[in-house]
Structure formats: C-alpha cells, structure tokens
Image 1 (spheres, one colour):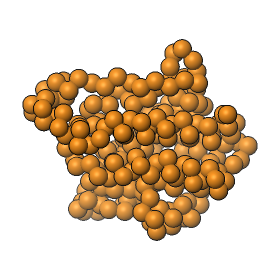
Image 2 (cartoon, rainbow, N blue to C red):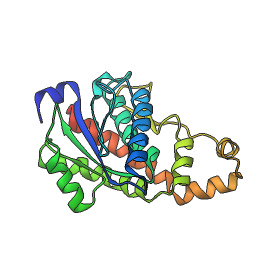
Image 3 (cartoon, helix red, strand yellow):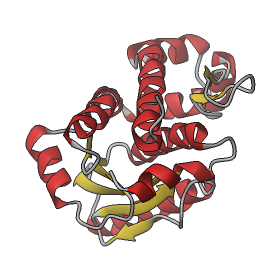
Image 4 (cartoon, rainbow, N blue to C red):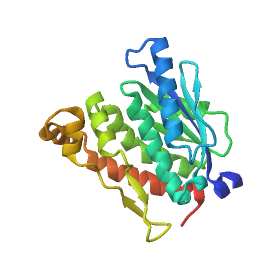
Length: 228
C-alpha cells in the first residue's frame, strides 16, 4: 500500500457493467449518466471529482476518505454506501467493482478476478492479505444486492435514505447505526400497505445487510488508514 494512500485515504475505483439488464446501449448509457450525476452530487464530500461514465461500460472515480466531514471513518462509511447506492440505482443492470489504493489506472487484474470468481468487488494493490479481506468484506453485500428485485431495491433505498452507519458523536472512532425510516412512511410513498413493505424488506434480509455494511466500513477504514 502506498504511503500516499495511507496518509490521505486516497482510493481509485472503477465499475464495469457485466449485465445490462435488457437495456439497449443507448438506454444504458443514459441510465449510467443519470446515476453518475445523482451519486456524484450526494457523495461530493469524498469524491475527488464527478464520476466519469465510460462509453457503455461503467464508471471510474476516486475518493479521499479523509475528506469526509467527520474524518476517515466517516469517509469509509460514505464509500461503502456509495457503492451500494450505485448498485441499487442501476438494478437490474449489474456491475463488478475494482478498488485500488492511491492514484491507480490499471484495473485489469482486479476485473479478471471479479469475472472469473463472479465477485461483486475486488480489492487489489493493498497487499495479498488485505486484498482478500477487502474482497471478502464486500462479497456478502454483493450477494444480497444482486439478489434483490427492483421493488426490493426501491424499498431498501427508501428505508435507508439517510444512510446505514455514521460516526458516533461520542467518539471519532466509533460507529452507530442510522435510524431507519418508518415502514408506514415508505408504504405511503409507494402507495402500498405497510405489510407489503415489511414482507418485502424481511425477504431482502435488511438487518443482515446493515451488519455487512458496518463490517465493510470498519475493515476498509482499518486497512486504508492503518488504524489498529
């Protein structure tokens, strides 16, 4: 891992479409552009610049975890949620992700591994042990995200609109879960009964997803920033 990445929390990421979800090239490109614009605005605090849409392929972007309002742990939480947000907004389009430390440009080895092993996200360049840890931390998240229907993805995004985890005000190195929205609010927004929302979210295993986001946030912070 480079000294620059350790000191600043700088990471380079790329997402590549592996399943267009039935979209034509024109529709897919427009969808990528719209998602890139929305996500770039929401996560501007950690992005070094807007997401760059690659021609019919996906996105490329870089982040600095230390730029988050509450520090690098907050930045890790934002990044994990950003990757999930991209995935949920694109459903049923699916992407593989690659994450490298510092200013990286060669993502090919990571994507080769992602394609071969059907992995959601592959970490590369952190060191063998940490590469596997980063990859493993996101594997379970990917299984859930890729398994959700469009309706489940919509409900989960609505439920967790304010985020999943955040830095606890009691300490800069402590996390807390962000409160979920009320089921009845979601039901009203989508014009369905609360029981439909509850059943859908239970099937999506949202509680498991929240714990996986917590774990990925904590591990990513420890690896990139070098916390004990």
